[in-house]
Length: 318
Image (cartoon, rainbow, N blue to C red; front, side):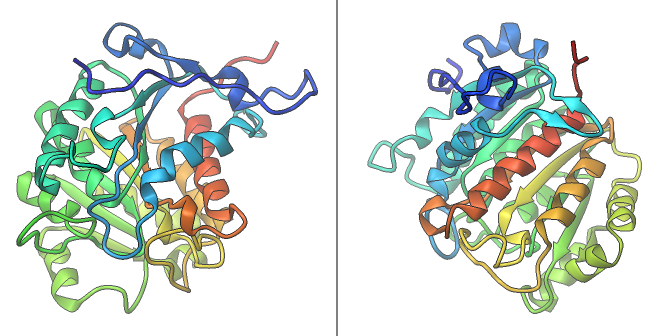
């Protein structure tokens, strides 16, 4: 039992035979444990948004991101065409938001932890398509059994709230730090979007915070600082919460706010970070197609995935 639905089939949208698109090259992966290591990256959907603080809609993120990604061309000017990409389907427990879901967010996290552990153990490079930010905890926590781990979180918020009655989209990094996460850096944080107590908590645990202003001043320096915060960890996990983008670039999130990153800053930052050989997984969360305007948030999320995939490896052009 993998906890995954059947992998979807992909197809491109262009009538030009020279226009190779992601839809033409992403392959369904039916046996992740047996075949996952053959791919440069494996996509996994997590259509769940019960835990979101704010507006819901991220449960439709995986479908929207796949649809937008399918129509993107595979060529990056520096890296060339992307390598071999697979799609393992969706976490099945999150397909239906009805009575079949676990009663609490923590119970759902426990289930998804098993699914993520299966993917990490299979020696894949998982790219999780969320879904809300509570999914970060189950996506990362299995790695703690495989060596030291740090997370670079591109986010407007620190997400270190106290779980109290239950986990939420605001609690994943406190849960991870309490579980033994070795390093944490939040890049793109917004002034006036977190409390002093939570900022102090991150500092007390050795984490670093790079504001959106600092990213705007120097993207390369921001990436270097985030990786410096990873210190000597053996594994780095990369997370993109779409609300790190400015509200004009990403209106389709649970909590859009002004003062965020531009898409160009975000894409460059992701490529710089994803090029670190210690990066063992990536996620994009809080992309909510029902809340979007003109599809701009979904387009940004899909291109963010494409940039990370291009950093993972390219194949030689014929």
